[in-house]
Length: 334
Image 1 (cartoon, rainbow, N blue to C red):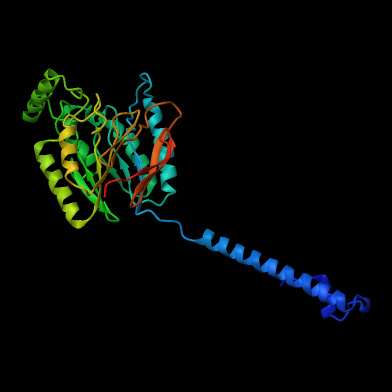
Image 2 (cartoon, rainbow, N blue to C red):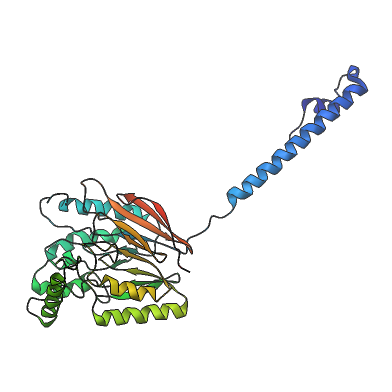
């Protein structure tokens, strides 16, 4: 207990007699004022401690995110420094492994070319200590024709497109290569159909009509509609993911971005759309839904790009590294 030396002297019988009654009253008054002051300070400190000790709002879910590692054992081409990707991926894995996450997303283009590149980068993911949920990108298909059918199993994906749930959040993972001029073996039925679609888009001067883009089939679009309707009914939040952007409408957009957007508009369960593909990144909000293009690992020597994503009821908090800056993005749709 805090005390005054004079009060201790009085209590111990050592207080000078000359101090007298007036001195005693003076001391009592000083002691009382000091006690009141100390009590007020104690209340203030106690209130501060309670505020400091109050639990911070916890996110509904936190997970890792990486995209466009795009490794190849080749010399740099412009800003693309292919051989640096494994070192950057290793650093990303080391950081994400400290976060005790349930999973990490990789949004496509894990390699750039040559199927054997998977053997270099896939083992690096083991250091995470949790699963990686992959999507395929256009560069994952720049392999031999005979190897295209092995990519899904190599990346331990259940299907070209699929869904999974965690903590009441449903992740719907699209295959935006489903209609493209690179996914299917040359001359196959699917390849010929996609070539015809591409030629018509090019003739109509559609901005997204580029050979590095792709889209979803009618079958996949129907599957998406069913998944989102089910999530609406079960009151699950949905984060929709694809390799290609749905927005902005530019030369990197998915071929049928507008068709997918129309499906999203019908389903309030969709809270956000995540993608890679455009290495520079982008961010567009449409009808309260953020469409976020995450930046690639590949670009800029010595500069990385990866994130931890914290999902709250009303916002996303992106904890970024390197080129991917930290920011908070409101979720505006009810």
